[in-house]
Image (cartoon, rainbow over all chains, first blue to last red; front, side, top):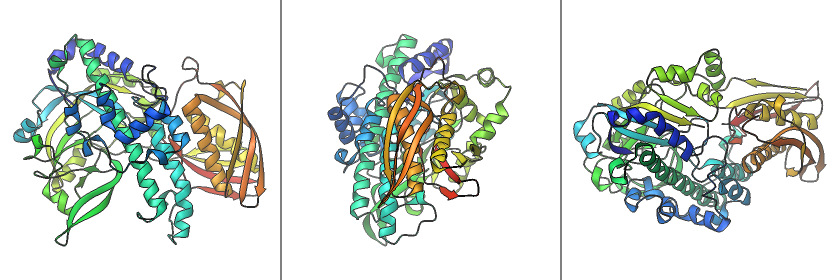
Length: 379
Length: 140
């Protein structure tokens, strides 16, 4: 999200802002806010409608939906194919960040590489931005676990040899394949709604901490991209338009300028691509390209990637005060668990600058801006 | 009986060894709880019944550990001990028993890592000279 604020506008109240975010957006263990408890019927609507459900409940504005991949709702979602266990896990987890590498981060625009694209994306130097990284939470994991059980058996039935059982699969048009896509799309819709709810609470946090009205904080969605998903998209193959199932696991969609699904506002520069780095250094905003469309099914990278295992990271942080270290670098961090901070420390990740240089060098996305973190909440 | 975590870049890998298959499952539970929190601080006052079925021993290990993840996610229960009985059926295996632990209390239980799911990645269950060994990876 971009704001109408500069770094100097929030710096005096940065700690209050991080605290508000931490209070308003539940992190860590599953439980969500008591003012957002869903019965099964309501959760089923979330799974069918995605982010639009949250907007209809007053959490966000309809304009937000224009800037979400697939407008925040996958067609073909089958809430009826989501198991009772998944419903139980999802019931109290809407509007929760989670743990691990999930985060909400306040940043500022540190560098602009492409002024034309930055202007189209509404970005300017020193501007305050906010990035949310979260997904379908326990509900999505349960959908995955439920279907892995089915797919392991299905793979054997379809004569598919598996190098590792976690890679179990079935033909897309088989009953098992269709059922999984329906359930997975429902889980994706939960993720869209989850981020939309947190977007709303992030806006409230800015207003509360900085004593601003909605138009003064002016937090607008730049874009919302997925990076663990399979869905149907249209590509030109051998001169023919074909509907393909595109699976992006650890990859982000990067549609080019003038693609019909690139929002009008960004039509001339391409779809925004958000590449988080780590909580000490920087993240990047990129845009998609024609080359990505023709060579990688409109896809690019999705993040820095780990350099150290979690165990190695924890070992390297023994005896160090990571929160103090980050604060000295100008980053205020609040986290539910210190173990997560240790596992997620900056040195645990590759330098994302090198990663984005590779994808830019390959021509599958273009750098627009670099964002530096100043406030982070984690699970 | 023992478990040992092994290096895995993004997830948590664990090797388990036990004298019986039931003990192997209990050690798996302890490894999972040890990943979530400081296991020594988990008291055992709360009892829950479990009843699961699976096609193979490997599937049963994954089903069982995913049940523990489910109980933590939905009921905030941390589990430290189990009394289990595993029986062969005509089409697989059946697990029945009691698990013991307590409700998660943020003031007493330090949260280490939330586990999303127990996976089939690199999954192995074997009988050995000692009894049983297993390798399993937790997705975090």
